[in-house]
Amino acid sequence: MTRFMYYPGCSMDSSARAYSDSIDEISRPLGIDLQEVDDWNCCGANEYMSISQTRAYALISRNLALAEKQKDGTDTLVAPCSLCYLNLAKTDHYMGEDAGLRVKLNTALGTAGLSYTPGSLTVRHLLDVIIEDIGIDAVGKAVVRPLAGLRLAPYLGCLVTRPDYADRWRSHEHPREFDRLLSVLGAEVVDFPLRTDCCGGHMTQISPATGFELIRRLVDAADRLGADALVTTCPMCQMNVDAYQGEMNRFFKTDYHMPILFFTQLMGLAFGSPPNKLGFGTELVSARKALAKIGVEVPEAPQPEAGAVPGAARPRREKKPQGLPMPRMSDDGEQPR
Amino acid sequence: MPAAGQVKGRPNAKVRSDAIDLGFLQEVARATAGDSRLEMCIQCGTCGGSCPSAADMDHTPRMLFAMVRAGMRDAVLRSDTPWTCVSCYLCAVRCPQEIHIPDVMYVLKAIATREGTVPDSTAPDFSRTFINNIHRYGRSFEVGLVARHYLRHYLTRLPGMAPMGIGMVTKGRIGFRPHRIKGRDGLRRILVRAAELEAEA
Image (cartoon, each protein chain N blue to C red):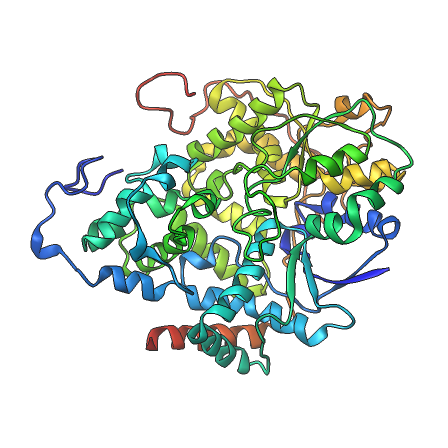
């Protein structure tokens, strides 16, 4: 077993439960032991940096300090979310480079009896650890049910390979490692030119027209290449492309149907785990048709615990999408590109 | 939208010379963690040419940085460019001068938030709601955040979003109770002290 410190991030027990469940499932066949940082806090996502730099870095540094205190047999802190990974790596990097920031953050951390020595942890994305430390060959050896017949578009998103403070990736724009990882699972991997393009991040919340266009580019490219699904490494990308695909379709009057799955779900499938333990069925753009191609039946979404969700037992009738107010369209009246 | 008195694509129109603050470049560079390298910009435009959301910006990043250097403080802080930045770091890895472009955008957003010069955008309010949840719980609280944000800013989007909302609920992807970390008091102390240190600088 290879041990790593683990920072799951806030989305893992809600919107990205499929990611969390599938990571649990593949840990044993990969021989990885993820030790969760005790009492970690939110990394602030994209939001805290827009309010206050010092507070944003201080928020993130608390996690680094807790992980440093807890580390036992490993210096590697792994994050499965690309934005959490960036924030943790960035704070470690700038605390090392900027003495003023380091003093400020350690002074602030001191009020809670904490401190952090930059460089004492190596912050890495889960994908990077699987590719470099476990190895693509070892992943291939664990495959018992090859995904032959499934056409996948590898979608890394922006923050796995950028800005890459530690120079881990050979290419920041067109890395091929993720393609190879999906290939050894037995899947057919399309040459997806948008593999490190942006999903729009929080734009679906604050500037929908901008966000929808970025989502449209991704699903359109995957669709033209005949992919059955996009494969992602980030909860934010999954949420944007999956949950907002319907609204994007209404915005552009298009009819894309492009499921987006976590790479760990597909690894679990290839390793022989049952689909219901890998979070399949929780995607809003159903992967049923895609997975039927390889003889896998997508289970009904697991129902949340009784009483946890008020009114969830009886979803209301869907309203007609016609005639409802739409977000702003392009001014010139042309069809958006 | 261009700020009042400003012509889109012609940011220097109607800028009065007494509104010029030549110290602005230094102010921004100082507020950026590490070495921003902002003063090294050679105005090549690689950033704007790489940017996936440049078409929706008041000013391309290249133009915005020229304005920073020209001391057009007010026009920069009223530009929607930093708020339209998606933080994808494509400009950052392509910039021949290795300027920390997304970090500079965050700094411009933070200054604009502090001074209340934010352009017409729901973004700062989204950020504030997000961080208020962190202050309260120590973790993000997705459903609380999104519910408040949409009720406040996007009522007209709600009907179209019903299928998505129902889907997220029935598929068990929404946590209805926020997770509270144990070290909330410690975290608050850390953030209060960090705010004091930032104010001193």
